[in-house]
Amino acid sequence: MMDAKVAQSPQFSSWVRPNRIGCKPTGSLGLPRKFWDLERPEAFISSGFYPKRRSTYKRLIAVDVSCSYNNVPANAVQSGSLAVPTNVDGSMVLKSKSQEIEPYLSGRCIYLVGMMGSGKTTVGKILSQVLGYSFVDSDSLVEQEVEGKTVTDIFKLYGEGFFRKKETEILRRISIMPRAVVSTGGGVVIRPINWRYMHKGISVWLDVPLDALARRISAVGTHSRPLLHGESGDAYSKALTRLSSLLEERAEAYANANARVSLEDIAAKQGYRDVSFITPTAIAIEALEQIEHYLRDKEGIPFDTL
Ligand SMILES: Nc1ncnc2c1ncn2[C@@H]1O[C@H](COP(=O)(O)OP(=O)(O)O)[C@@H](O)[C@H]1O
Ligand SMILES: O=C(O)C1=C[C@@H](OP(=O)(O)O)[C@@H](O)[C@H](O)C1
Image 1: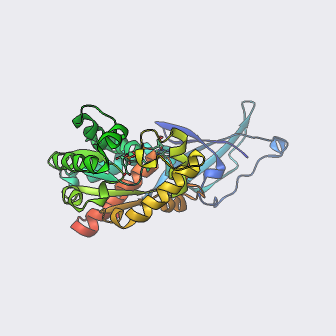
Image 2: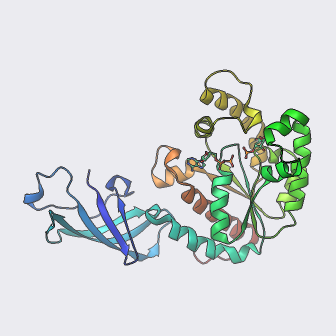
Image 3: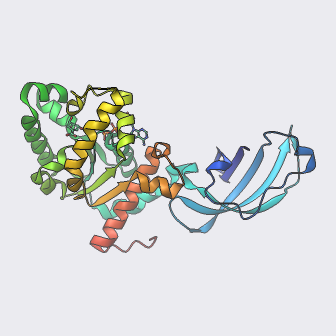
């Protein structure tokens, strides 16, 4: 395998591995004979974007390739075009996408819904930052409301019904706030009244495969997630069993969201087999894309980039 250094613009350079380049190059890289014995030759690739965008994930770039070894430069051996995943610098895509969409949100809140561990908090913080919104965690607000008790203690002391009522009251208060990205609790979707509040903003379902959820949750433990207590077996199997039955009950309710971000779809677009390679930044970009689709399809906003 060969590592390649890519400089897409004078301001940015990063290392990418050829196995992360999504499409086959239209030109192949030929190495002069003196480099043939090297196991890991290094190439410096300077590149420029073609103006036309293909998708958020892949762009055509023109590449000129030159090689060097032991600081001895070799002549450019080949140039051509490659499609390179834009997560080489996802933060630039994220920033431009958020700037494009933000005016059309008109200050509306974004509600992230999804199962426990689906990344609502992680992705929500990223989105709030790029949009210049505040970040709100509904579980934390419930905890503040109940004398600083943890969600686990609230379930233990007062039961799930009590927690759900508090959660609805918190959502009602959030729904009159402007400009917030809200990480909701995983069970918020089951009460229809909660949708009345969430539909004042734009809701996005983070749809993550169960095995990935179980892996994430077993890595951090279930202490803060009372609905996952009580199963027997190892941490992964316990989480998987309980999450499966919860998802069966809730899948239809999650589908009420205005937009859906499917990690399986992102993995397919990026050419990954495993969703665990997908970064929170890539998920945030997809969330903005799906919000853009929603605004265009349901509200008729004519985004010229679509
Ligand atoms: N894209 C991701 N890839 C890998 N791990 C993630 C990803 N997003 C979140 N996580 C991890 O999964 C766990 C749950 O994420 P979190 O954002 O707290 O989910 P939620 O708020 O939906 O319960 C955390 O340990 C977090 O670091
Ligand atoms: O799925 C659920 O019913 C719950 C999810 C939790 O939030 P997270 O999704 O942030 O873990 C928390 O609200 C509570 O433990 C109940």
